[in-house]
Length: 390
Image (cartoon, rainbow, N blue to C red; front, side):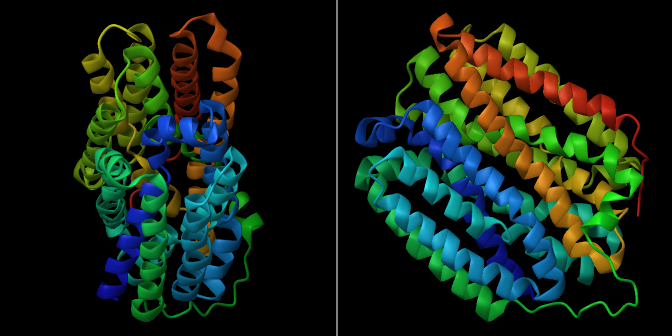
């Protein structure tokens, strides 16, 4: 099982990479195949929405088929196949289709490990284990920044994606040979996704899950690139360095959040405080949109750090899910978390297109303001949630 979890962690490195690497390909894809920021926002949003939509069948498959076959088959077909398609893309549509395939391939990876944690480890350790997997796997977020910018400079983006297709196929094979499925829960209780949706406690958690990850996911995954290019005129390498800083802050935030619920004896107030701070930093980024490149990079890093409450929100929701519905429960939470980024990318792509003629800073002020408002709304709803510690 330990070897299997290590391979699943490598697969999650790939998942984190694929959701974030477009930020450093903005200029190259624009030059080579005519992809605009709106095209890339659509492709990025499609990745997140397809990933989110897949959580429903993935949840069923984890409960009924097991994590080994679910993760290995989808990563092989979607992850390796999508990266290969991206490598030969000649139009923005090809990029969008490739990102959709990659979204399918990455969709079961994190939830497969969370499923194993929920079945094989004590509930009180879930948040910490989830944070460790998320934090270590987020190395992919770092690789998708400066190292990817260097790789693209050295061998080109097509060769880089071809190499990633080979790596994805190798990791998928590793999952098949090393992951052991937990023993199935034998119970007379039957259940479905509808039973989870009837749980009132989840409905005060799901709205914040929808918006909490969106700012850092969307900024790191795409908008940091166009923003730093358009407003400060940075090079692709410099954008890679800036996104490396934000990615490192997101990892640090994940590890910081992980044990806080046990240390402070509360999940609700840890989550609420962190997301209110995230909303404040987004507002400050709007106010100081073009003052200083280093100030902007610092604020993006702080947004990434404070917005890294994903594993603790997951643990909060997990507390209200019965054992025989763990697979569908954690994937439902993930659907909202990742789907929120997809919806945000579609929305912010339209916001950019509608405000691009109003001045160079207008689109980014509007985008960051949109995130600040949606996170604040999610916090207001979350105020009514019921705290829970395992």
